[in-house]
Structures are given as C-alpha cells and as structure tokens.
Image (cartoon, rainbow, N blue to C red):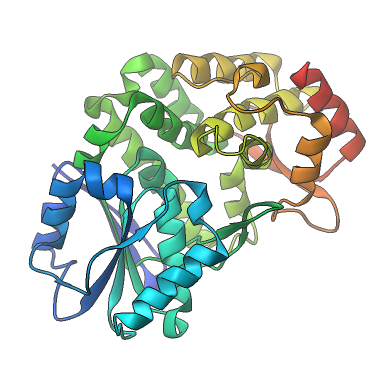
Length: 363
C-alpha cells in the first residue's frame, strides 16, 4: 500500500507517493502521462541495477531519445555535466511543456532539477528517487545545485518538482551502507523537532530499516519536512533547521574526496553538532550521548577517526565551513540543539572556539 504526502505550496504544491507500488499508483493517478515528452536523467548504476523498474516507469511514455546518462557520484554535480545535459535536451528538441524525469539518488535529482529550472527559463521535473536518502530528503523541497571546488551545493536555485514518486522497489537494489546512510536523514528529522519520534526509532532499534518500519518512518520524516517547506520555502527562517549536521557534514564530505557518503557525513555532523551544543552549555550531555549511541546502533560512524577518507585536519575543516552557503554577515551559522527534538540556529559561531573544538574531536 502506498502513502501520499502533500507539499502545500498553493498552485505550485505537489504530492509525494511513497511505498511499494508507488510507480503503479502514479500511473493510476495519471502523473506520468502523454502527450508531453520526457527527458530521462539517470546514471549508469541505476540503468544497470534497476533496468526493470526503469523500463516499467517509462512504459507507454513518449521518451525523447535514450536516457541522458550522467556520471556516478558527486563529480556529476559540475558545470561540465550540467552543460552536457542542457545540450542534450536542446538536441532532443524539448519544449517548455515537456518534463525532465529524474531517476536516481540525490545527485541525479539535484542536477536534473537545476537543468529543468534553467532550460528555456523553466520546465517541470518529476523526481523518482532510488535511494533512501533521496526519498527522505533531497527529492522533496525544490533545492537544486551543483558543487564548486570550495564546497558542496554552492551554485543552484529553488525549483520545486511537479511530483515525487518514492518507489520502494528501488530500495531492494541498495547495499546496506547506502540504506544506513539514507537513514541518517530520517534520524535528522527526529533530532530537529520530534523527540517522541526519536524514542520510537530507539525502540525499533536495528529493525528500523526493515520495510515493516521504514515506510512509517519515511512518511513521518517527509510530513515533517513538508510542513517546514510550506512555511519557509526559500529557507529565510525555520527551514534552515533542516541543515542540522550539514555544516560539519559538508566539510567532512568535501575533505573526504568521495570516500564518504552524504548520509554518513551528515550523521557524523549531527554528532558533532550535539557535542558542540554541549560545549556551549546548550544541550544536556546525556542527549548528545543518546544521539551518538543511536547513530552507531544504526550503523553510522560518529568518531572522525573511524570515517573513511584521508585524515581530517581542523584547519581544512574550518575553511570549508567558512564557505558554507548558510553563513551570514561573515559569521559561520550552525544548526545546534538544546536537546533531542529541539534544534536551534546559532548565528555567530566563534571561529577560534570552533577550531579548538575540531582539534579535540580529531585527536
């Protein structure tokens, strides 16, 4: 059985269908329809591992040529790949009334969304996330971006999808590491604003990643995000709280040079955010300990020395954080916490104190 969550943005609002059979449900609701043409974006991994599901999604649609294949991983989020995608779309003769169909993880969704926003000043994009991380977070909310050498997601626009189809059949193709990384974004929701949800996650333990629990957890996370996006689409206020763990996490991810999955970086970043909150006297130490314990139980490493990639240095981490897009007035802006389920914005983090904190964490 599929669930439906509404992202209420007035005339630009849209639905998220999630669960086993979401693609079939989308067809019943006439989400994927002709006569419009579709440009399909996917990476080689998705086209290989999910060929049956992809073929089913495209059956009966007027697909413009072969799928536009993009590189795997974060390296696809570049000006070069964006230019290639836009060039292919022009060669295919797409019109503004057509649509981009993004089938893949967060990278594919980010790139496809940005291409759709730019092409002839904007066309529809339908997100078909194939990873748990993309289902829980990046496919919902309209953020699109590519990376720069200075950091992640620094060039982009807000461009809401016209629909999101979170088909659970894709999750069967994911290795455990990918599932665990995606689960970090569900945990994040509880840490930001739902202490009771965190208690339910703890109670489920390692069973939280089974389909029996996962659909309910994912629906809770998307419903939580939907309310925040509806209230603050452009991240002028409370939507910034959804970046819990991301300032530290993006720095870790960039420094790891591809060895660290986004969800793994966010998980470690959330542990750092809670530890730094304790350092500032904002958060009880017992809450930070619960966060670390549960993340580790979920298979997510929280100690920097245990993370894959080259050794992290405090100075390089801090420099990455100085380029974070959430910063304001020349100050590093962090999402911290007064406790589990009570995230707050901390607008003027002290760089010298952050450096000392990072040195302590990296030792």
